[in-house]
Image 1 (cartoon, rainbow, N blue to C red):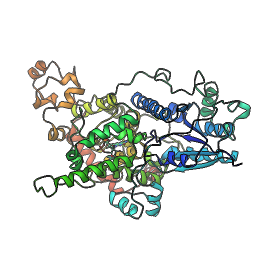
Image 2 (image 1 turned 180 degrees about the horizontal axis):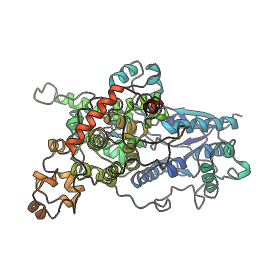
Image 3 (image 1 turned 90 degrees about the vertical axis):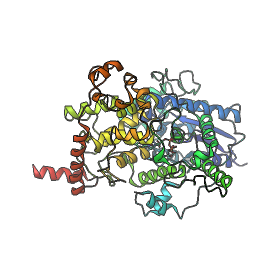
Image 4 (image 1 turned 90 degrees about the horizontal axis):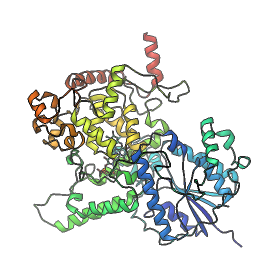
Length: 572
Ligand code: FAD
């Protein structure tokens, strides 16, 4: 008699049931049982800087997914296992006699390294096949990199050239109607010390071992129910965002956005206003794409269909606006995501830092990250100049005295999402625009506060904005007053997120320190007392930044810290 197929489906970047190639591959095996598992990776939970809004979004998405699983099989639900996947997945495969481990492939950063360790351990057990299926992006980054001769895709043009020979993204797959139930979830002694999976005790470092030991008591949660933890249980305060997680909400938002065919078809990113927040001028679907609550193919085809309908219904109408094209249109936005994924996939784990990152120009930023001799990041890193540290903190807290920058940084903290051009503004200000502080520091703050934080898109865009890679027009700096005025002269975003400035007349809303004292008094806000004076002279610092970057460009170092450091040592 043929051995029954027993699948462990490992959910990670795909918190959905619609258009999931990996879930379809699992179901194509015709399994008798399917265990839907989420492992609570301590790298994510304890070591990463995940802010409350991202955590909350994740938990909501997990609840929504669990409900979708139960709808398809009354016995099914998301089984949350509180242990490092390197340890948990092999232990569960052995305990539950799993014949196939299936998951959506993740090519990004830490995840790729973690997964190869998990696979190594599972294979060492014998008896379990592993299926890692592409599905998080439109094109498989590994295939794009291969087509680009192993090199990172450094522009949309190079990405397109590499992708053109690859199959076009297919139409999305429907969600499965039914799922097999999970089998017996008894853990037996799978996680007792004597029965640890191969390599666990020796391969993991001291910190992780501590976590492992802690996890032994709670592997299936406090009541052994594999339950999704609450914010309270995780020791986190309530979220502050109004953005709600989950596949149901993702599809609702996509539906709502695509209902307006004119908006979809004529979408032109540079014209969308970063000052709009309720609703925002773009789709606000990035958090859902990040956690895989929304498939990128679903997004792509819904947009394409909406554009087709628009074009057809407008027929020969000469007066109607033509549909926009990549890179400005919505499809073009997805292509930027693809470009960064492929670039990261080629560069590898150092994509998120300057050191050892072959695509990143070396610029002599202030407050750079410090590294130990073995290349690991030093935490806490030695502090830089006190003035720079103060500027960095003011930027992070939204207290620079520049209302446009402060409103955006406060929106980021409160909501966990900001418009793309708002990200441009604050990233440019921190790095090459005014403060000349390393993009690594800014990227870390985004890592903590963004719900949609993603190792490829975040680091890639920070390199772009700081002119460290992808983009080099360092003399084009966003004005802290002139740029927002192009979109909104009334200062809506400032009035909302910096309420102390709400009563200033439009004329002064982006530069309240220039308002006469009687205007300040009338607005009920004295600059320097109720709201900070600007932390720097933006025009002077802009000129300084430009000339420093110009010098750095002349030297032309690329991610070669050793060369820079040894040149400095020789000069000294
Ligand atoms: P839309 O304009 O509606 O675009 C649709 C989708 O296309 C987005 O949801 C997103 O998945 C993708 N997209 C659009 N622009 C980009 C882009 N430039 N790069 C990559 N993908 C893009 N995006 C992230 O998803 N995660 C990040 O961590 C992230 N960090 C960023 C850091 C900086 C400094 C900057 C300048 C941009 C960053 N972005 C990041 C890219 C972009 O700002 C967001 O994807 C976008 O603003 C999300 O809003 P939306 O869903 O309304 O986008």
